[in-house]
Amino acid sequence: MSDFLRDYLTVVWFAAIALVLASLLLGISALLRPNKPSAQKLMAYESGVNPVGDGWSQSQVRYYIFALLFVVFDVEAVFIFPWATRLEEYAGFGLVEMGIFVFVLLLGLVYAWRKGVLRWV
Amino acid sequence: MIALAYWVQSLLRVLGGTVAVLLPAGTIVYLFLFKMMSFMQSRLGPMEAGPYGSLQLFAEVGKWLQKEDIAPERADKRIFRIAPLLVLVSTFLLVAVVPFGPDAYFTNFDAGVFYMLAVSSVSTLGILIAGWSSANKYSLLGGLRAAGQLIAYELPMVLSVLGVVIQAGTMNLQSIVMQQNAGSIFGWDGIGNPFILTQFVGFLIFMISVQAELTQTPFDMPIAESELVSGYMTEYSGFRFLIFFIAEFATAGVFALIASVLFLGGWGIPFSWFGWDSVGSIDNWMNVGGPLIMVTKMVVLSGIIMWVRFSYPRMREDQLQRFAWKVLVPLSLLNIMATAILKVVF
Image 1 (cartoon, rainbow over the protein chains, first blue to last red):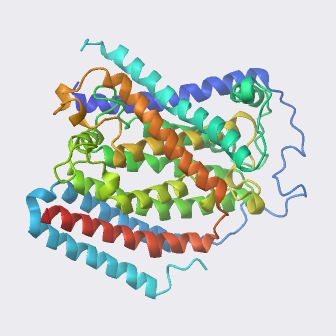
Image 2 (tube, each protein chain N blue to C red):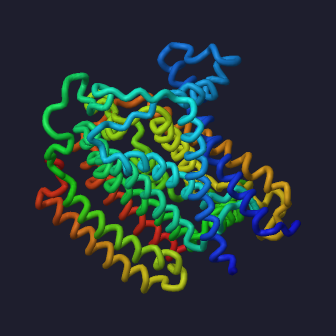
Image 3 (spheres, helix red, strand yellow):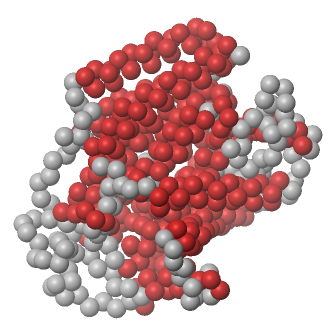
């Protein structure tokens, strides 16, 4: 197997060891801990009083616009990274290109700003 | 170099990774959370278990092992139980990318920076799952806040790292370390060329984003004990709570390690001191010295993270979002362009 793929296999081992370690400790804990459930204990915690309504109550998801903006900027970062590693070859031409690219993005941010989207209301 | 069989290598790496996760977590909790915070608040902190309470950590683990594991009746129990494991897996995946010496690394990705940024956001999933599955209003609010905060600060982090990538011209973390230590400042190579000097703005933005990604205090609205009890962790008890706790501080340590790789020269010492000039010429003892240097830098950087945590009051949720989008993102975009222009001109 190539070194490249072996590196990714190492990542799999790391995920596996995290799960094994946590399961091992949880297993030891399962042997040691008491288990005496009662109705009060299993109730959702709401500062000690009986919970009102459903736990999955309606709440306003305020950050969906942020999430959209995040996707835009994150995809942009994906474009900038390869450019960044080769900047020495592109020199002035690449610089102007990326200047325009970043400028358009900044324009988008300013537009969102002006529209009042960046406020957490 | 002795050639080791693949399974021996993997075993060593996995053991090393476990140490690299648990050691920072233990150090940070004892040194900073137990002792530094106590001293800052004019108290002694734990003193009973071992000299100066140094065995307190083991006592804590022993205590948490015996605590009942409660899942609320209405919770979505299966994913409720998985969530802490997911956060811990994210920490382990993150440490896999950190180089500790010329040959002492776990993985050597060409796109290491990409990998680092990708897996660091896995923990967001775990936190959102924890908040959602608890069927508790506090948890739900905490989880939603965490998601909003982590995506907002992911961006300045990505963009601030871009400055380093532009300057180094590579995304391989090992090469980034090499470049800093082999570099010179206007021809003077006494201390190499750590990127903190040229990327100071990037370093500041990176550390602020790390503080927010770790939900440490000026940015701890997802946990906010005075508003949301304990945020997304409200319903967790026993060892599953401790896993969240370990993962939080381990991730703080790993991010400190990554920051020292990107900005402070990583495991290396300036190559000019010993006349090294390439990977091959570095003496073998650096595989022992490197990890020690990394631990030192980790303690210093995580000390700063914790210092800020113990010193500042919590920001408000809208202030947090405004700071990320209206200050950090434009600033880091400017930083990228400034770095690029300077790189092309010089």
